[in-house]
Length: 390
Image 1 (cartoon, rainbow, N blue to C red):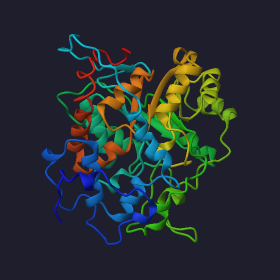
Image 2: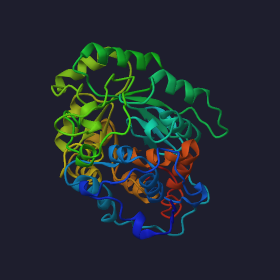
Image 3: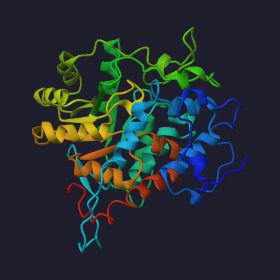
Image 4: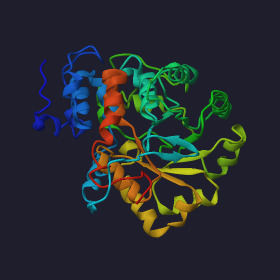
């Protein structure tokens, strides 16, 4: 198998519909030939290599989105419709990209959004993603559907030496379990483990219809030690996302927020999955510490609005929410200029999910290279002298 990173016809035309699932088996994750990491210069490159080297089922699981993929694509393309207005003759010899997130200092205005079963991409999975986050000054949010117990991931990150390291936070993402006692145990274990905030996912009360994931047959058996969920097949198909999400409580409502707070007294609670200004106001009125504008990477409800456009909606219609709580955004972030645009529109920090996961195909070094590339453009090119300066 050969690769040509400069083959833009290949890199820019990855599968865009469920009908384009690979029909022949490729190499197992991280065992197939990959181009040298020195030839990888963008998120698109990492994505292309992932498509060419991961197993068909792993690719389907991490890349798929709901129905016709409209929301997934709009997340990305909406950024191109927002033009930058670069200012000139500004001193950018010292670029400061640091930001405070829930009282925690970050070197970059980034957090790694929660991703499920990262060990499918690389044996060290969430551990190597966390090590790279620590070295880069980026926050990590660990998923309820992570590959390893929370304590193992936290220990791997804390024990990892890094000459560039700063005291970056680790957050925990919760899918509310139908068995509330299990959710309570997870929350309390997360607090004992030293996580700095709880991110409650609210944009996926039921699994999305991810057709590529449904169509592609499993090649291994997987389960999560945190959620206890096991993937499988049934008469509907073989979607890992759907079968592993069967434990999620579809009855979750605003009335459950006080109960969650009671499980982790003193920890900030962040709602992940705000998609309208109305819900942003409700989150503010509920006293939330922060919100993440997100549509689950287009994986939940197709034709939901692009995340960056929801951020613009909030900035225009309900600017008071930005003073009452921190506002983050994820979905479609590929370039440093995308981060800059989100910050200009009011986001405190930006979440990235698939990008670091694709980069983890190269282990920690791949994720480090991914984060380094994010500020290679955007900052100096647009006279970005402070991450929260708009």
